[in-house]
Amino acid sequence: MNSYIQIANEHIENNLAVRKMPGERGIKPEHLPALEDVKKVQRQLENDEKKILKQTKKK
Image (cartoon, rainbow, N blue to C red; front, side):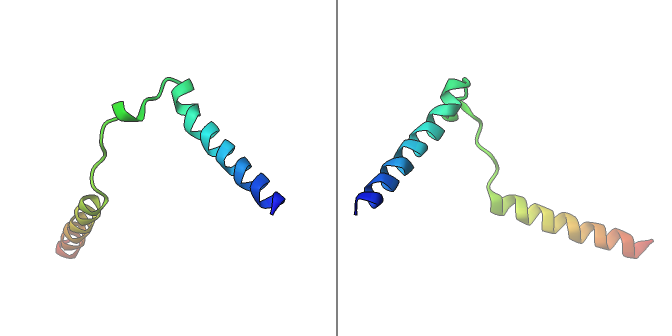
């Protein structure tokens, strides 16, 4: 049980250190712009692919 507690504490300390890093570098996640929705981007890529296929068939 003792080793479990040591591992859990190490995990917590690592997470805290990783979360602290961006702030130390001046990066504030709450100030980053929101990215496009993944599904929206995927639909756009699929539409683009269909357009390209149609264009290549015409040639």
